[in-house]
Structures are given as structure tokens and as C-alpha cells.
Length: 599
Image (cartoon, rainbow, N blue to C red; front, side, top):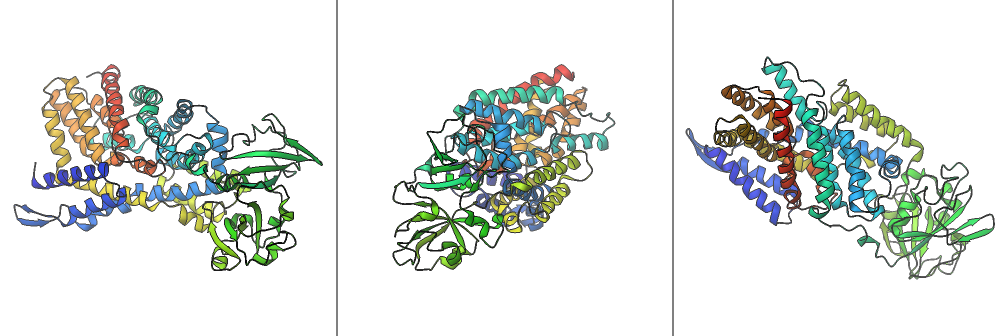
């Protein structure tokens, strides 16, 4: 092993230690490690050399197709989120489980099935915001759900040839580099399906114990500001005829229905079986995050007719909180008499008053100093009123733009078209994602500002930097040296050699990208089988399964990094569940492969 390989392994070891014990951002640590591999000098046969990687080599990962695809998928997901398509997934597909295990079952089983035939990066990108919203509604921390969802998509990808790019890379190498017959769609299924079944069972049985409880979804509900807001069921609402339970209004996190006003009558203590009628007025009480979610529900509209009189489409507006000052000209007047909309080009949706339940309708509320107003307005309201003497404080509520429900079916259609054309191989996944993101913006499923804001730059930076580190492992010879060392220790027994080779594949996959790992180790698989005089297919199957089994560290697979932030994870959370899962899936693969593909 040369000095280059030693330097790379030392830097990686230091990186993993810092990721495990420090609170520095992941993307910052990865870029720092990459920078060290550019600038640290070391002796070579021709003299001192500056860095293992050149600058273009180190940062080539940032132009990688995978990074660009993830960036485009963030925009596609923004279209789904802004139209309420993700809300439909949450309500119809995920439902309302009663325990962590049942929640894991509801998310892992469909995720595994979807990713067997769809690109797992696209599946993860779509499910992250859905699981985030869902976890808040079912009051289960997202840290209990994000890693299992991600792992399920990886396991599902191993079940078919098109399930993951790793399998396609191996299939392409078989065609171009060997005289073997081409791999067929379901050749890998005989191994991948048992591994997926065992992996999902592991997640369901041990996942709740091994995963952290972090970022509790109820922590944000301890808010003394309780708003009372009125919503109406319009005559064309899809909620008409649905029960409170079916409409998703029973288990509102941090909110509840106070009463339903119907035809001059008031229904108190509304039960979950109560059916909604057209023009029902729902009086709801809750904290601001719940009010934000309620006003985005499909089939409900704010009861005040002032929202339709503002001079901009609803999807361009946002919610704000503003505290009424003692110099506000509206103090002592009702909201209607003060002509709030005309004065501020904004509409009050609800009022919070020091924990007091305000019984009046919105227009009849007399404003007092210190009242906190929940306001719907154009984004410019923030800058216009920030220094106004009418309000003590004005703050924007993030992600509060009303949903564009009329475009939900269009957004789902765009997603389906993207998946179909990419799965059939008509265009590359990157091209399909870029086209879909452009169509989302052009059809106004999301605005250009929504699209820009949806891109999670820390995630993209982390993925790009990890690809650069993988380049260093491959170029320095660290990966090949590790492979030679482990395989040489297994002797001439085919089964033990297969086990050693699988271990090498997993270790290299954890250090570099899955596609780079299988490309690097493909010739090792073929030469190992040739030296033993056995069938190479068992080693190719181990290469495909092991090339996707990067569960133990965040950089082992690009989707691992995608769930890192949304799940509120730390580096040590990954090996805690990933190492035993690597062992379980690895043992399953090594036991099953020789059964279906004898030596």
C-alpha cells in the first residue's frame, strides 16, 4: 500500500471520528477532508507531490449526474408539496398508525415495493417531505422513520435489475467486459428479495430500539398562543359527505374542532363520525403551526370573505404573525370597522389574546394592544411593516403558502411521467428530472422562488464532496489494496472467498459511491472466480447486493445523506442500526447466493 493510500485512509479515519464526536455540519467536514487531500504534500518516487487529488478531480463530484439529479428532484418534490400531492400520499397511502412499529410497516413495505421498479433516489426525494408531515400528525419523531424509509428503498432496489443504478452498472460491465450471457430483469431477484424481506423484518423488530428519539414532533406544540380560526366547507368541496375522521380533522396535532356552525345551529363536542355538509363553518383552536396546516387542507377555505378580495392569487401569499402595538390606529375598533384589508392589503385569519378564548367572529373582534394576529398577505407585507409603529413585531411563518390544490393531479401526472420515461430508458433519469422540474414551474405547480428555496444545498454539497473522497480512495489504490488483503486471507474455499469478497464490497461501498465501488471491484470479482475455477455469477450477485448495502455510515449511499437533516440524525445513529443490518443482509446474501447460483 503506497503513501497515497495511507494518506487517504488517515484522512478518512479522522473524518469519521469527527463526524461521530463533533457537532460540525456534515457538509463542512466533508469539504474540509476533501481540501486536505488537495493541499497536503507527500513524497513520491519523482519527488514531493502536492495532494492526492487535483482540484478538478476533487470537485468533479459536484458535476456528477447523481448530484444534479438530486437537485432537480428537489424541485419536482416542491411541485408535489405546493399542490398538496404529498398530503394525498400521507392521507391515502400512509394512513394513521397507532405505534412506531405499525408506522414502520406502513412506510417500509410500500417504499420497498416502489423502489424495486422506480429509481430509489426519486422515491426517497418524494417521501422525505411526506414522512416529515406524517410524523408530525401521528406524533412519532421523524428520527424513528427516515432511516428505515431510506433503507427500505435501498433494499427494494436490489430486487430487480432496474431497481438501482448499481445493478445496471454491473449488467453493463457484464455485456462489455465478458462473454457471459446478459443479466435478465429478475436474475437478481432470487437473492435480492430474500435480503429485502430479512432487512425489512429487522427494521420492524429492532428498528424502534436502535433508532434515536430526536426532534420530538410535540416539542413545538408547547405554545401559549392559542388561535381560534374559522374555516368553511365550500359547496364544491371534496370533503362534503365525509366524516370528521375521514377528512383528517380528528387527530390534528396541537389543534381541535371547537364547534361546527350549521344553518344557525351550533354543534358542540363534535364526534369523529359527524359528516360534513356544504357551507359548514368549522371553529378550530390551536397553535400557529396547526393553523398553518389547517388553512392548507384541501376542501376548506377561511370563513372570512376578505381573502378573495386581496389583489394577488392565494398561492403567492404567506402567513405572518404580528403583535398589535398600543399606537396602532385599529386599537379599540373591530377588524371590520378598522378596514384592516384596505389599510394593510392583508387579511386577519385568527387572533390570539394571552390564552383567552375569543368567541366573536373575526370581523367583530375588537383589537387590543398585545393581540397576536395571524395574517395572510403578500410576501412584501414583512418588509412594509417591519419598522411600522402599528406592530411591535412581524414574523413570517415558514412554508405557509396556501396549497394549489387545483393542480395536484397535474403534479402527480408530471411525477408519473418522469418515472415512466426514466424507467423505460427513453431518457436518462437526470434529463427526466430536469424536464419534470421545468414543467412543474411552467405549469405553476410551484413558483420559481419555491423551486430555488426547495433545493437543499448542504445535502448536495455533502454528496458532491463524498464523491470526491471516493475518487481519492479509488485513485490512491486504497480500495484495491483492501480488496487484495481481505480476499487473500480467505484461502481457496469458494464459500469463504465469496464471504470475504462480499465484505470487501461493503467496506469499499461505505468509503466511496456504490457505482464507483462496483466498477472498481468488477474485475476483482471476475479474476477471483477465474483463479478458483468457479462460476463467476455468485461473485457478481455478491457485487450487486454488497454494492447497495451501504447502511453503516451517512456517506455510504447518497440517499443516506438526503435523510440526514430531515431526520435530525447524528453520525453515530447510522452505524448503530447500519452495522447489524449489514451483517444480517450479508449473511442472508452469502447463504442464498450459492443455492440459486452454484459455484
